[in-house]
Image (cartoon, rainbow, N blue to C red):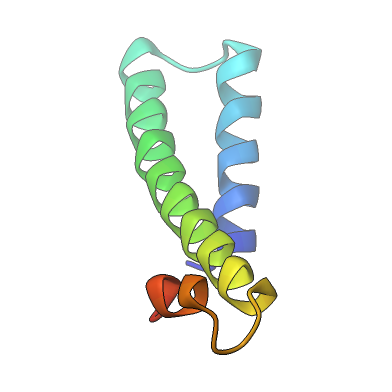
Length: 70
């Protein structure tokens, strides 16, 4: 899944869990799925943040050399 679809799926899971209309087993499965999606989203955000840092660092600087490759 892509970042946007992961976020949308997480929102759907949260909505289902907030409604309290699922069994305990289903709620646990949804929670487990949400935790996995959250980990993927976090990794992607970290990668994007690193890329932005590299792009905002002046070319040829020591800081850029330390950040690359992203």
